[in-house]
Image (cartoon, rainbow, N blue to C red; front, side):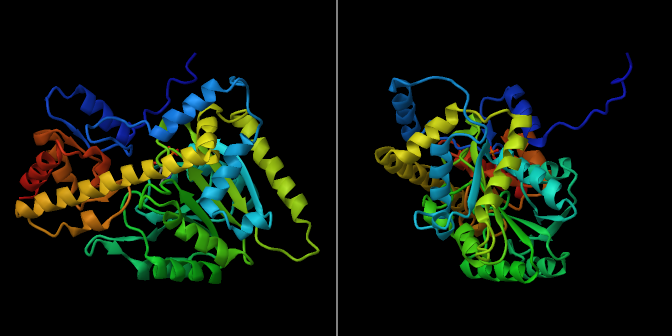
Length: 411
Ligand code: PLP
C-alpha cells in the first residue's frame, strides 16, 4: 500500500511553469518569450503552407490509412531527411555509410543516441556546451551516462569562448563524446563562424573524440538549408576517414511540426579498409536501433512522417517549404532588429547589438534573473530566468512594449 508514498516531488519544468503562470495571468497584455515555437506576426502558431498542401495530398491519396509504420520508420522520410541534412552530393550517402532510423523528433533521436552510447561506449563522458538546451543533461544522464561541460558563452563579451572551448576539447579524456549544436545554438543564438568550426573539429579529431551533431534548426536560422548544414557537412568531410558521426535531426521547427514528433537518428560510419564488411556493420547497427525502437515505441508515429516525406519528395512542395523557412527566419530577424532599434532609441543602458548578431529562435539577452522576474511581475513579459528570449514571441504589435519593459527593468 505504501510502496509509492515516499516518491519525491520534483520541481516543475521551467518552461511548463512559465506556460502555466502565463495562462493564469489576468492582465490583458501578456507576452510569451518562453517557448521555442514560431509564432506569426499576430502571435499565433503558423501552419506552413507547404504542410497544409502536403496534408491535402496525403488525404486525397486513395491508399490513405493509419496503419503502423515499420520499426525503423518511413523510408521516404528517412531518405529525404538524410539528403536534406547531408546534401544531394553527399559522399557519405553515395558511399553507403549512413545508417538511419526515424525517431520521436529531435528529443527521441537524442534518446536513441544516449541509449546506443550507453550500450556500446557507456564509459565515455558526454560533453555538453555551457550553457546548453536544458533537456540535454536529462537525456544523457537518464541513460546513466556521465556528462561534463565545455565552455561556450563568454558572458562579458557576449561572444564565443573559443579558447576555453578548445582547451576543454584538449583536456577531455580521449574518445569522449562531444555534443555540438549544428546551428542556431540553444540558448545563446551564437554559432561558431566557419574558421572556428574548423579549429573545433580539428581539435576533436586530434583527441579522437566522437561527434554528435544536434540538428534542431536547419533552415530555421538563415532560411537556407545548405548554409545551416555547414557544420554538419564539414564534420562529415573531416571525419570521413576517422570516426563515426552521429546526427540527431528534428523537423519540429523547420517544418513547424512541433507536436507531430518527426525526426531521424543517423549514424555515419567512417570509410574502412576494403577487408571490412561495411554492409554487415550497418545491418548490425540497424538491428540494435530497431531493438531500441521496438521496446520503446514499437514503431514511430506515421502522420507527421508522411507529411514531412511528402514535403521533401514533391518538388513543388519542397520549393514552397524553402519559401516558408525564409518567411519564418526573416520575420525573426526583423524582430531582432526592431527590438534592438527600440532599445537604442530608448537609450537603454548597455549595448544591444548581440540581439541582431545572434541567430535562430533565441536571443541570450544578458538580462539577469532579477530583471527577468520583474519583467514578468511588472510587465507580464515572460521568459526563462537565464535571460533567454524566444524572439518568435515578438511581433509588430508587442515589440515596442517589450522594449519599454526591458528598458524599465534595466534602468
Ligand atoms: N535540440 C535542441 C538544441 C533543441 O532546442 C530542441 C528543441 O527545442 C531539440 C533538440 C528537440 O526538439 P524536438 O524534440 O521538439 O524535435
